[in-house]
Amino acid sequence: MFRHDSPEEAAFRSAARTWLEANLPMALRGRTNRPPPAELMPWYRTLSGKGWIAPHWPKEYGGMGATLNEQIIMAEELARVGAPQLPAQGLNHIGPILIEFGTAAQKAKHLPPIIAGEVIWAQGYSEPGAGSDLASLATRATLAGDRFTVQGQKIWTTWGHHSHWMFALVRTDPRAEPRHAGISFLLLDLHSPGVTIRPIRTIAGDDEFSEVFFDNVAVPAENLVGKLNDGWRIANALLGHERLGTSNPQFALIALERIKTMARATGVLADPGFRDRLAAASIGVTALLALFNHAVELTNLQRSLGPDASIIKIYGTELLQSLNDLLLEAAGSDAAMANPVATNFGEVDVSTPFLQVRRATIYGGSSEIQRNIVARRVLNLPQ
Image (cartoon, rainbow, N blue to C red; front, side, top):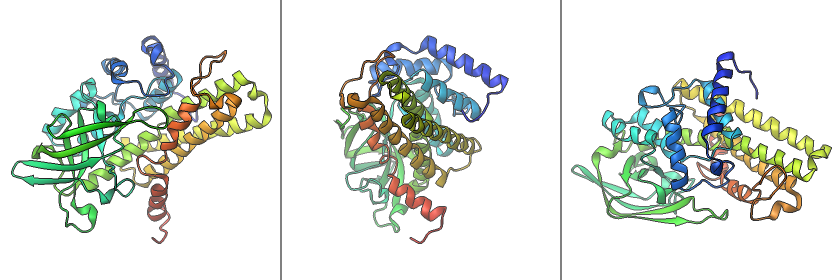
C-alpha cells in the first residue's frame, strides 16, 4: 500500500494469493472469533506443510526465511482472503525467544513441534495482582537439586485451556531488589500434576482466556531459559515480539474491508463526511503498515525493538479500536445486532469485533504503560 512490488515480489504475491484462495477452507474465512483447535489446527498444519507457517523464522529452524517485503506481502494476502488468527504464542513469542536465548537442547525439543502444529503454547505473565505492573508477580519457583517447585496463579492466559506448554515468569529470589532482579523465565508442561486450568468467557462471548493454577508443580531445571534470576531481560525481549504481533496489520486490513463492505451495503458510502472518515482510516492503516515494515526490518537485523515496540503497540491497537468504531457507524441501526449482519455483499460481524478490540489496548502492556515507556526512554521526561 505504501510501496510497489518488484517483479519478484509481484510473482510471490500472485503465487501466495492463488495458493491461499485454493487452500483456505471457506468455513474459516472472515471468522471474527479464533476458531477452536479442532477447526483451526488443520489449517495451521496446511500452512506448515507449504513452508509458510513462520515467514519470520530462519530456514534452519523450519521457518520461511522470508525477506521483509515477503513478510508484509504474506500479512496483506492473509488479510485479503480473510484468514483466521493463528495461535501466536509459539510462532511469534517463545519460538523467537528460544532461537535467541535457548540452549541447543531446548531448540531441538521445542521448535520442531511448534512448526508442525503439534504443540500449542501459552504465556504465563499476568497474575491477579500483577498485570501491567509485571514486576510485582508472586508465582514462586523454588530450586532444589535438579528441579523447581512452582506455586502460584496466572490469569488472562490466551488459549491456556487448549495449550500443552507455557512459558512463564516466576519469582526465584523473593528478597531481590529491585523486584525484577529475582525473576526467572521457565518452561512448564501444562499436563504436569498440580496444574489446573479454568477457561474465562469474555464480554465478546468467546473463551480466549483462562486462569492457570500451579500447586507444587515439579519442573525440571533444564527448562530454565537463560540464567537464574535473569528472566526480566528475556521477558522484555519477548514483550517486543508480543507488542509487534498485537499490531500485525492483518487485523487492521480485515477491519478496513469490513467497513467498506458494510458501507456499501447500507449506502453510507455515498455520504461525503463518511468517505472523509474512511479515507482517514485508510491512511491510518497505511501508516501502520509502514510502522510494521520498520519494526520487522529491525527484527530481521537482529536489533531489539526497544521503545519502537511500544510505539507500534499504541498506534496499532488504538487504530484497531477506531476502525471498529467506524464499522459501527457504517452499520447504522444494525450496529447493535449480536449476530453477523446479512448484506448483499456477504455477512459482516459488527458487534463481536467491536467488543473484542476493547481489550487490545490492555493486553501486552496497557497503553498507559506504553506511554510511560515512550515518555522515559524516548522523550527523557522525568519520572
